Image (cartoon, rainbow, N blue to C red; front, side):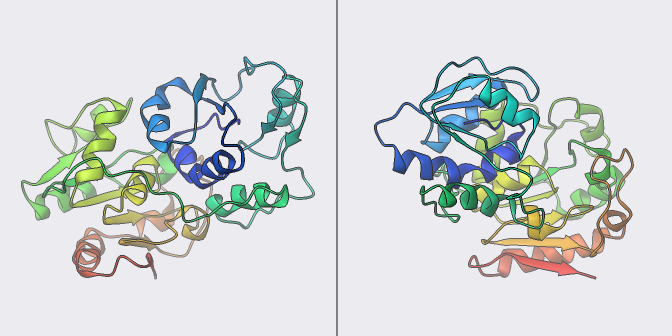
Length: 286
């Protein structure tokens, strides 16, 4: 399987990976994905081998019985998989790809179409420990368009008190230090454990949001410029704040809709999500 993307991308593909595992219980399943994701891949319990592969790099595998494109619709990803000379290839193309589809459902749809049933709600990861009182605030994101301003995160962190732990991903240490002088810096596995056992997570549309979903950790998620209907949690104790606008997810500056979210909205949502039901995620748009 090819899914050479980020942490959130990996976690939205978990139901598809588990569907493949159930369909081929005796096969050796290899996932071509970035090596730094190994700490997360091992927790999915559906992959036998991680083949370190960067997003645009060749795939170092030859003649698989089945190649599955969980990366995109092509043509680049299709060409890379065809170069491995698979006996069979499962992939989208321009005619079958639906733009307006939730990312979890997208890959389940693909496999279902090829006779491999998937449960789109089978995305949970096994528990990693007892719950603590910690509140994780993660200000980073892969693009500026999805980064809520650091000073607003700082206002929220001050209001929530000493249980707040500010986390920093690779290259995000300076950003995190605008909120606290001593942010959390650890391995991916340590970050997963922190989120898995936290009382609450506050972050944007980024990988940590999907970690919270995978571990049933209550979360307040700040969306823009992407629709929650495409990348938000399908269910669970989560509150999504979104002001109903979309834009360029690769832009350098924060999305205008994201900037409409205020610290007071976030703090109100914190109270709501901690007292709410775990059965369904809620989207608040204005």
